[in-house]
Image (cartoon, rainbow over all chains, first blue to last red; front, side, top):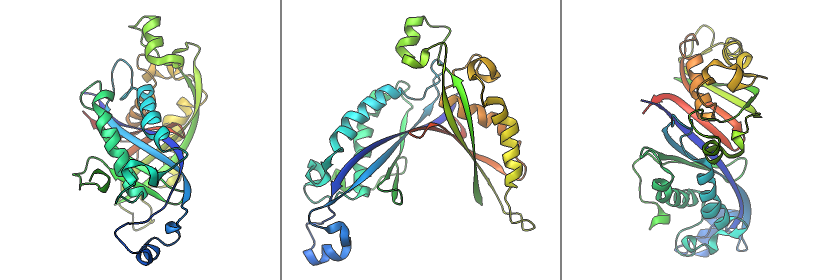
Length: 154
Length: 137
């Protein structure tokens, strides 16, 4: 029996986006999204927190190999989104609006797929994706909850 | 039920080392954190307790009392010390952020009157922290 600890690492990237749902009229979009619907987009400095939970390894004192986790996050999250326009990302080019909610679902999907490789014990879980869009807005996705299908996964 | 969080800070030295491994194995697993001379961090501790509001005081727990408990049990032991060399729980256990969170839980559990320890969060730096809720796996 070992202690179950949640380990969180924070990553940052800066990106632009425009909130615009193709299924709605321009007027509806303007009404729903307000200034976030500005046709030329706008940008944020995003901070993403990835939390994984698992037993503390007795030999290392770690729940996860952070170097490996950082390398994956840098490659698949930071390099993918940093200094980009989110609407130009394949996941957000169609019907899926690059709201921070949907971004959280996409980051969850990406990290969940990597968990078996990050996991030396078979007991490591992705438990939370939290994104700060600005200092005043943050979004938290609890990954242990039974999932409604995310829009990003459609 | 109210959850109340008190923050404290301590600055400590540590390094990561497994005595059962060769120097090369330690270097491979821990990189520059294996430097036996150690290195240091400004740690931030957040302790969250849960309890009911006392109708007489309006408090779950007296914050000054909680501050004093954190000072006595944790900060005075860890602050401006070398965790590996001077803190008993790390004599044979790596002082990783994960293990520090568990150790602080053990130090505080049962010592806070009128409230239940809910979470110990330890920030090694702004971009890295560990949470312990007293769970085992």
